Length: 403
Image 1 (cartoon, rainbow, N blue to C red):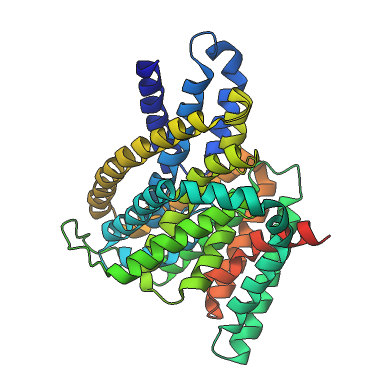
Image 2 (image 1 turned 135 degrees about the vertical axis):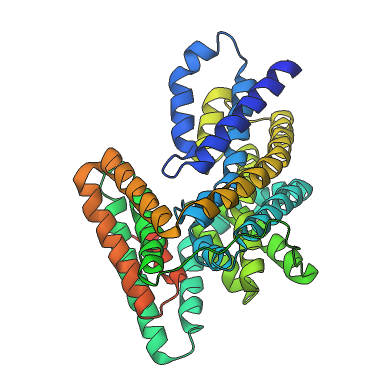
C-alpha cells in the first residue's frame, strides 16, 4: 500500500509539473480525465492511491504555474495578479527572484496550513452556516475599500468604470455555456496579451537574468504575506463561490503596500493554501470547493480524518519536491531567455495563446480574447491598476449570491 501511494504521488507530481507549465491546462481537466478512467484504474489501484495522485497534481500545479505567469505572461486564475510585479522584476533581470518569492509564499503557506489545521476544523464546524451567508457582502466591502483607496476622484471613478466593465465582460463570458475555456480567454487577454503587446510597443528588452542574486527578505513583510495568504486561502476554501482570485484581492486590501516581493509571496501562497485547506473543508463540512476535491470525493466518498491527514502528508511531499523542480525549471527559462530575442519570444507566446484559443473555442474565442485584451490595454493607458480588472471574476460571484 505504501509503495502504491508513493508511486501515484510521484506520477501526480510529474503531471502537476506539466499542467503547471502549460497555459490553458487546469487541474480540473486532469481530474475529469482521471474520473473517466477510474473504473479501469480501480482494478489495479486503490481509491486512496488515486486520490493521492490528484492531491499531488493539484499542489504541484500551484507551485509551477508561477513560471508561465512571470516568464511568459500567460496566467491562470490563481496567478493572474502576479503578472505585472513579476514582469517588472523580469525586466530588471530578476525573473528568477520573482519565482523564488512565489515559492517562499507557497511553501510557507503549505506548512502554516498544516499547522493550523486543528484550528481550521474547529472554526469550520461552528461557523459555517452563518458565515457562508455573507460571501457577497464581504466581496462588496472589499471592492468598495479597494476603489476608495485610489488617490483622486478621477482615479476612483476610472477604477469603478473598469471594475464594472471587466465584471460585465466576465458575466457575459462565464454564463455562456458554449465557451469551453472562458477563464483562459478572460485572463490571457486582461493580464497576458495586453502586457505582452505593451512590452513590444515599448521595445522592452529582457536583460541578463541574475541566477545567483541574493534574496532580500524582510521578515515582517514575509510573515505578514504568508499569514495573510493562508488565512484568505482558508476563507476561499471555506466560503462558497469565494475562489483564489477573490482571496487575492481581499488579502491585498488587508496587508496594504508590501512591495513587489511581499506581493509575490502573498499571491504565491494563496492557491497552495486554498488547495490544502480544501481537503480540510471536505472532511469538516463535507463541501468540495474545487474540481480536484470533487474528484477525490467521488473516488473515496466521505473523507475521514485518517484519509485527510494522509492526503495532507502527500501534499507536503509534493510541495517540497515541487520547490526543487520549480527552481531548476526557472533557471532553465532564464538561460533560454538570453538566447532568444525578447520580441520574438513575446510574439511566439502570443501566437501560442492564439492557437490555444482557436483550439478551445474557435474564432468566437478570438473575438473574446481580442475584447479582453483591448480592455486590459485601455486600462493600462488610463493608469488603472490590473487588480480592478479582477471584476471579471468578482462581480459574477457577487451577483450569483445577491440574485
